[in-house]
Structure formats: structure tokens, C-alpha cells
Image (cartoon, rainbow, N blue to C red; front, side):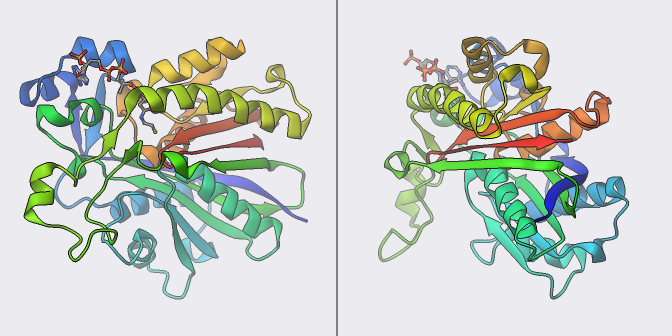
Amino acid sequence: MPFARIAGTGRALGNRLVTNEDLARIMDTSDEWIQQRTGIQTRYWTEDGQSCASMAAEATEKALAAAGMDKSDIDLIILATLSGDAFFPGASAFLNDRLGLPGVPSMDVRNQCTGFLYALASGNAMIRSGTYRRVLVVGAEIHSTGLDMSSRGRDVTVLFGDGAGAVLLEATEEEKGILSTHLHADGRFAKALWTDAPASAHHPLRITAEMMEEGLIYPKMEGRLVFKHAVMKLPEVINEALQHNKLSLDDIDHFLFHQANLRINEFVAGAMGIPETKVRNNIQKYGNTSAAAIPILLDELLESGNLLEGQLLLLAGFGSGFTWGSCVLRW
Ligand SMILES: CC(C)(COP(=O)(O)OP(=O)(O)OC[C@H]1O[C@@H](n2cnc3c(N)ncnc32)[C@H](O)[C@@H]1OP(=O)(O)O)[C@@H](O)C(=O)NCCC(=O)NCCS
């Protein structure tokens, strides 16, 4: 049974740098509040002309170059996003078109901040089963055009950024690459972090002027509940991954956690006794880019030159759904 290794990574961002001060000019918030509660200093938001698929394509081109592959090598496209180009079809159809790959199977994964881990697990399973040899896995999000820019939405709006991260998975006969994936969900909390409309659950229309006025088109979050569950579920899924691979925390060289809130990651690392030097964060620059966060983090780790052959990585994330998961990789 082949293993799936990551042959190349790439990233793309929204074109517009937005500081906390920029937000404080349009809503009742402050740089001090945002930094204290979340660690975020800046985020990148898209400009007209950018789309979820365009950023995904940009990240893919970089990943292809890094892997020394041609786009014609791609057997399957998996795109994780909660903010696709259209209501349907999935954003992977638009990515397929941008890459010029007619006939190549393309699918969306819609698991919010755990989306990349679900997509990676799916790509891994396709390779392990022998179905495909090279799978493109991308996480891409445009949050900015769906956020409430008034003070009503300040608890959510200040958190999110736009971006994309891509990895190319390739089958290998060596025992390296993805060693395990673990995925979880608990739909009892589906409405603890969600956007209500437009949606087919509304009858007879998916969206009305009243619904827009009420703000149902914007994400709503029970922040404290999300925080509480994130700091509980992340250690659980990290321990599950370690036990499965018969590894200890000390064996892991790099921990790449989803970037939802610096305080969540600091809390988890502190509670588990993971040294700060092993936990990489970039939420300070990018905010929460949901499905794009972990692949962007991985791309930056590679770029830094600190990821060495043979090292072990543990990826873990938690998000809307609730969903959570992990992946252990040998580089
Ligand atoms: C969002 C979060 C930072 C808020 O921090 P908190 O300490 O829970 O803050 P609260 O929601 O209790 O709000 C505290 C106060 O700050 C205010 N506040 C909320 N957002 C604010 C903002 N952007 N600027 C200034 N004040 C704000 C609230 O209105 C509240 O005011 P009040 O005390 O007068 O009622 C925190 O709950 C969190 O990070 N949750 C998890 C989020 C997450 O991970 N989401 C993504 C998952 S993938």
C-alpha cells in the first residue's frame, strides 16, 4: 500500500493589508482588544478580481513549481472551502477551469476550519487505496466579503482573513509522508458558529431583504463556547494521534495548529507541556483563514528552512460544525 507524501506547497493571500487600526476606524473595536484576546495584528483581504478559485490557482502554481511537477500530473483536485465562488457548483470546478484541466475529477470539502484536514485525509485515502497517484489538496477562503462591517459583527469580523494554501500529494513506496489522520464532528453544535442564510432551509426563499437586514448573511459565533471546546478537543485529538502512532510529544518536531486564536494555541501548548519553540503560529499576520490556515503555515515552515527530512509533524485543528481532526506526517 503506497504512502502519500507532500511533494510541494504554495500559498496566496488577499491583496489588501488590513490592520487592527483600519478596523477600529469602521467599527467599535481597538488594536489593544484584538491583540489581547486573539494575538491578531493584521490580515489580508481580497480586492475585486480575486476569488476563492483564483487564490487557490495561485497557490497551486507555486506548489507545482516547488514539487517540480506539471499541472498535467494532477490526477484529482480536492478543494476545502466554506466560501466558494458560487452557491454551486463547488469552487473546485472553477479551480479545475483556471488550471486548464478538463476531465480531471474535482471535488469540494466543506468542513470550515477543519476543512484542510478533512481534504488531506481524503487525498491520503485515495492514494493509499491506489485510486490516484497525485492529488492536489487546497484550502482557500474569502471571508472578507461575507463579514458584518458594522460594530454588530465586531466579535467575528476582526478574526478573519483571506488566503489559500496548496499541497501536492504524491504516492511513494517509502514509509514517509502521511502516517495517520483522525477526523471528528459533533453536529449538536452546528449553530454555535455558522452563517444562517442564504440557505435551502429557508422557505419559500433562501434569502429576503428582511433576512439581510437582520444580519442572517453574516457569521454568528458563541465565542466562549467555541473557545472552551477547542481547548478540550485539540489535546484529545493530539493524544489520539500520538497513541495511534506510538509516539510521545517529545518525538514531534513541529506542531502546526489551526490558526483561530493565538490564545487557544498557547493554552493547548501550555496545558500539554509542548515547548513554545515547536509550535508555529502566523495568525498575528493573517488572522483566521479557515481551511487555508494549516497549509499556509506549512508552506511558511518549509520556506524558513527549519523543516528537515525525517522530522515528524503533527497538524491539528478545530472549527465550525463542530469539527476537529489531526494528521501526523514524516517529512
Ligand atoms: C472571540 C473571542 C476572542 C472573544 O473573547 P471573549 O473573551 O470570549 O470576549 P466576549 O465575547 O466575552 O466579549 C467580551 C466583551 O468584549 C466585547 N467585544 C467583542 N468583540 C469585540 C471587539 N472586536 N472589539 C472590542 N470589544 C469586543 C464584547 O461585546 C464584550 O463586551 P461586554 O463585556 O461589554 O458585553 C473568544 O471568545 C474566542 O476566541 N473564541 C473562539 C473563537 C474561534 O476560535 N473561532 C473560530 C473557530 S474556527
